[in-house]
Structure formats: structure tokens, C-alpha cells
Image (cartoon, rainbow, N blue to C red; front, top):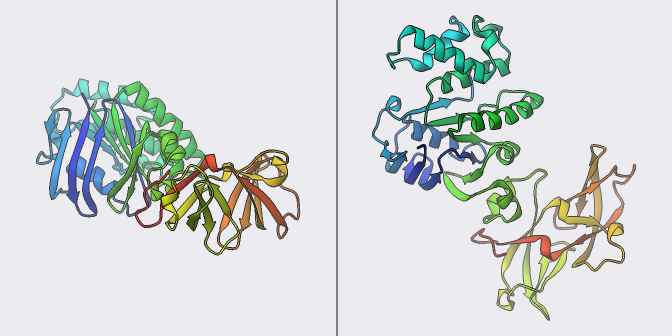
Amino acid sequence: MAQVSLKNISGGVIHDFTLEVRDREFVVLAGPHGCGNSLLLRQIAGLDPVSGGEIVIGNRPVQTALPEQRELAMVFSTPALFPHWTVAQNIAFGLKGRHFPKTEVGKRAREAAEIAGVAELLERKPDALTAVEALRVALARAIVRQPKLILMDHPLAGLEPADREKMRAELVKLQERLQTSVIYATSDPVEAMALGHRVAVMEKGELRQFDPPLAIYGKPAHLFAARFLGQPRINLLEGKLRAAAQGVLFKENGGTVELNLSDAPKEWAGKEVVLGIRPEALEPGEATVGKTRGARCQGIVEHLESNGAETLYYIETGGHTVILRASGRGEAGGAGRRMAFDIDPAKVHLFDAESKMRLF
């Protein structure tokens, strides 16, 4: 059993943090630098103290246990390999203090190296390894202990983008093969979406939402979760709700965007809100001719970014710059022209401007 229960954990930037990790689950603690996810991992590992709350691994409270008594392993943001030891010796270090016979240590080290993909590198020294190979050795050193729980603290941060993409896929396969619970800290929303069975979005030591990544993306419960998860970023328009014949009317502060929200209760009129719209939920006006849309808006195209398959339009509305994602290549010289775009009320997210919580 590798269930992990964090109950009202406090200490440092962490405030009254509660989280339940299921057995064999890959959970990502995601947030910007300073959100506290690295500290929380260190507290679970016993490397940093907690001032309150309870940490339970399996069925055993461990908040007062020594790190080596917690039946877990940790992979840090840098591999931290001993430079004068071989790969085999570095991997075997994960078994220090376990009192295994020498033959068993060698056997386990080779098995871990095979799983991590470094079996052919056992006699090399760390300075002869690439960044990816060094990370693989660090992973082997963690899994050689056959821990119930593996903690990973920004392990891909030092890799090139192409290597990060490759290693994301390999980490998913590794966790599935080991069937071990993993808690993974990252500040990269792409990593969070790609890796986590569930993602805990953190802001300044507090939990904003804990759900599967697509659930957060499709229905963010908090404004911060909406802002953090998803690339390109969600469009967030500050505005005010006004009374309408049906529901209420959203009016953008200082801009041209207006949208009737017929499903919203009329008593919300007068409320300061933030309207969230994913870039793919906006459509160029010419693409929706003849369709019934919730709102036809317009603005000035500031610039375009195209990768060939799709184009991002950055459109100034007067109050905000919104991003519209469309398939295909944008036209040359598109910047500076006026562009119409449509918003479907069924695809928007509405947040209370004061509490930051989702309204619908």
C-alpha cells in the first residue's frame, strides 16, 4: 500500500494543506516558483519539518519518523551523483544502510539500471554522462530501493525542450511499470497536463484545485487554476455584470466585449467578475458566418504567431489582449487590421473577482 495522506500540513509557506494520494497514483504538485511544492515534497520526505498536521504513508503516520524510515525515495532537480564513483556505485548508494549482501546489492543495481535504461553505462563516471543519462541514473538510484513512494522535485528542469518531451513519456511508462505511487513537483503546466493522473494546483502554499488535468482545464474551480494550467494561456477579461432581459450581460472593463449570459441568475447583476475564455473557444468571425453565436466582437490584431498547423491571433479589444487559436496559417500582413471574432457563452468560465472562485 502506498496511499499518502496529508492532513492540515503547515510549515514554511505551506498553510493547512490537505491532500489524499491513492495507491499507485501519479500526482503532480503544480504551480509557479515559490508556490511551495518543493517544500511540501521535502516535508513528506522528512528533510524539512512541519509545524502542524499529519503525514501518513500507507497506514503509518510518519511526520516524526526519520527520512530513512519513511519507505520512500526522492529524485531532485539535479542528479547529485558522486563524481568519483561509477554509475553502478551511484545506483547502489540507494541501498546504503539496508545491510544487503554484496551480491544482492549488485543484482538490484543491475535490475534498476535496466529499468532506467542505463545498463550499458554501469562502468562510466558521471562526467561522461549526458544530462538525460545522469537523470536516468538518479531514477535508478531511487527505484533500486523498491520504495512504496517516489518523490520527484522538478527532475526535468535542467533538460533541453526535446529531451524534456521524451522524458515525460518515459516517466509515464516507468510509473506504470513500477506500479508505485509518485508525487511530482513542477512549475511547467505542460508537464502537469502530460504526467498527472491528478494535478494539485498550488499558489503560495495553498491548494487551489485537485482534479484530473483535463477536468481542471475544462472546468477550473479557481481563477488561479484557470490561469496556470493550459498553453497558450486562458483569456481573462475583467468586467461587470448588468441586468438583461434574460440572465445578465457581461461588459468588459474599458473594452468592446459584451456577452449575454442567459443562464446566470439575475441577482448577479452588479457583480464584478472575470470572464475566462480558452483561445480555442474563440472563433474568427468569417468562420461562423450564418451560425447563431452568443456574441460577435471585434478588435485590432496586434500580431500573429504561426507554426504552420495553427495560428495564434493576439487581438486588442480596448480593455485586454485576447488570444484566438485557429487552424491553418495566418495571412501575411494580418497585424494592424480589424478582426471580428465570436464567443460562445457555453464555452466561457466565470469567476468572482473578489473570491476568485468559479461562478460557472
